[in-house]
Length: 96
Image 1 (spheres, rainbow, N blue to C red):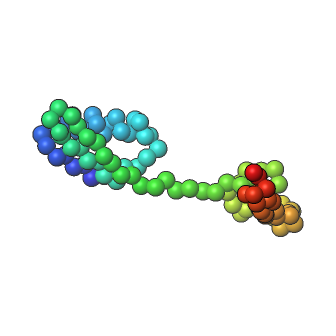
Image 2 (cartoon, one colour; image 1 turned 135 degrees about the vertical axis):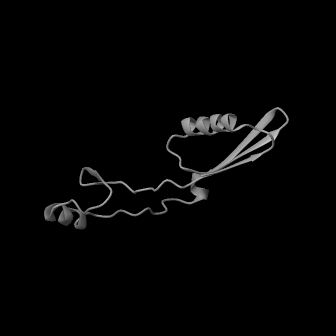
Image 3 (cartoon, rainbow, N blue to C red; image 1 turned 90 degrees about the vertical axis):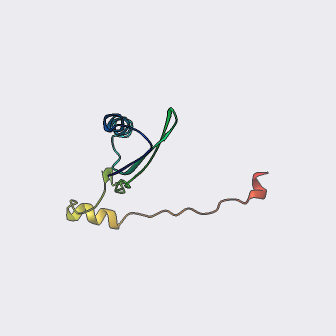
């Protein structure tokens, strides 16, 4: 994490701002935090790493991310599923 302070601020005060951000966003991993002192005000800006996202689907009654723990019967059940697609049912003119 990179902490940049523009202006006069002691280290303890800067640590308080960082701690407040971490408490407000406990699931974020901050890349940079910029504290800009403007008179009596402090502007806080920050960037953070993206949180890895794992797709979870409901398959054959189970919430799963991957099929690697399914036995052969469950894998066959997944392959035999009917996959539905979204189709256009009506035009905008039909809705008026």
